[in-house]
Image (cartoon, rainbow, N blue to C red; front, side, top):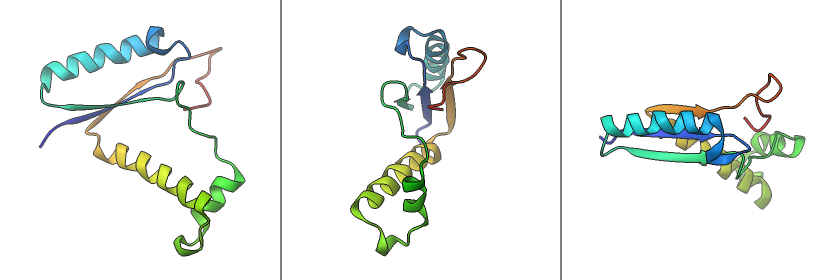
Length: 106
């Protein structure tokens, strides 16, 4: 079975951010131990996920057969993200601190 690493970056400075560089160092070390391994990269600064809103929350509460097309899309996106987490044997977070707090996109 192929090992899978999920790399989640959140730096506004993309790969130039210190947290991204540290996460990438970890990924490189992981790859040396798992040369056939798979790395899934999700950059939340470049491709942010929406914050939880009442509309999004209602999509999860609605019965599957009663969901609107928009609600189905919201749930499908959520399910895909959950599948990424489930597929990962390890997770590395490139998580910066801005003014002593983490970005809200996390």
